[in-house]
Image (cartoon, rainbow, N blue to C red; front, side, top):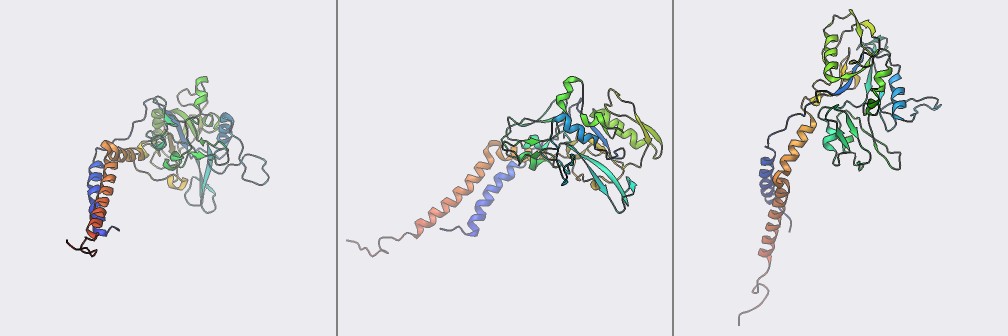
Length: 332
């Protein structure tokens, strides 16, 4: 027998009461960034679009070339992919004549993993193929643990993890901050080769101090921009004038903070960076999940609704069965 609207609503309300109880559990806070976390400061105003970082990343990580032109003479990736972990993109308006100008200007942005303090990809992965190092904070990927569900791809607010659709045995590709080079005393290849210091490696806490130092200087004033590794000062600085920075360090607060932070002279949305809340998506989703499954609340609510529906159907069927008299029988 079909279920009428009133019966359905009664069952749904019963289950909804349990769900309301579940979702009222105390929300968890954003996970903190490790004190000694390492990362990158990308200063868009210093980037000249040379793409030396793209080539160095490919070499350091053994990534194949990716062609976007018919002649296929050189590596020309247009976006992150299974073959490209780091790419430079450009914002352009009108004539595109003025560097770091919103009107008739252009600016560069570096796309790669941001190594979030509270990463959605790690939270979404059901088999711990995505992990976050408790010391360096680097978000790593283990292809041997991966089951190819691609939850990390859907969960990342920056669209970073990419799936190798063209491989017989595919895996996820993402920047791991050249962690394999660190035991040798090296660091992220993209920062090592950057000629202007647009990509700078170091401890996140020190990169934030450097970013704020730059924003506090007067536009037009000359300053020395560190290159390579901020903490070891392994390269001579690049001297240039201070631009008119947007007074915000992107990644300082977004989704709980990221280990790759950014400075720019044009609004970050022009560079393709999404506007995000301070609360991480992982904190939101895990709070709801833990509430729903704590004490088996969600399964109980679901079974309660099914039980109510079944009970109503059985009762209705019993009431509709004909008695002996209605079937033509008589008392003896």
